[in-house]
Length: 320
Image 1 (cartoon, rainbow, N blue to C red):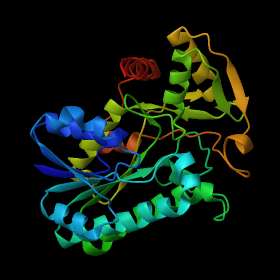
Image 2 (cartoon, rainbow, N blue to C red):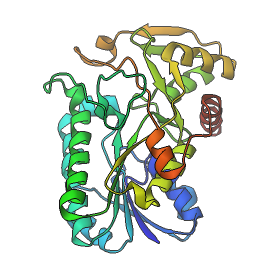
Image 3 (spheres, one colour):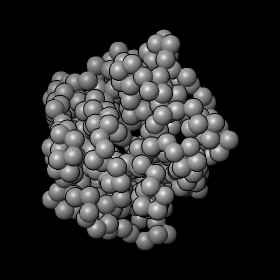
Image 4 (cartoon, rainbow, N blue to C red):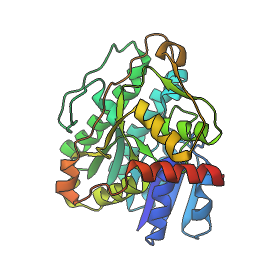
């Protein structure tokens, strides 16, 4: 097949590109390189099956031209990272809202099936033991820019679902929970690469808040397996599925584990949310995915644990 990946030079997108090319497909990547990196595509570029276009999903002419040339669309392009969202809220909203609308319009025009990447951020402050796809969203004030990403991704989902319900465009929606692995940058607030980089340099590991908040981390290789399983299943059309690992750990314990595994001399220090971000920032105390739906529909489940994630991130940072 010939496939389009928007945001294909990013962390997850570049791993998806590598995997699809290794499976024998031709891949077109559209990326503006604001958070993606051309170096992420170095291996794929030697395959002879990659076409890279530097451009934006906000450019409707480019998007329409590329969509017309492919059989399937993975729409991963988005403004990501808490720091990025807070520093550039208007640009982030435009990318996440208008960009998705443009891609969906083109997909409808040429009858191309599309997989939309959403986020566990849509659940907001819901701290259920196991977040199910149909659970309620709990958000703060719309005037708190911290929640703008959550709102944008929720509208993206609604748009995609409406295209399926009303126009019968084959749409699939995935909600990423914390995804980690080689190539991920800590510069936008991603906690694991930030902690591992500090540990390898024996520098202080800074935890935002009190560190009692918990997260679940999925290895990017597992997440790519999940993405492809969703894309290849007819049973996932017109629905949304969580993608993640449900192994829960506190941020305090994460830092300790990273120090232990890297044999680091780093000390743990704490920074308040007000100092780390802007005043009034809210975090989620807990975020655990329920992954029964994707297991039922595709048979997928994660196979790599947190130790594997930390080791792979450390090896990548040391090699680069």
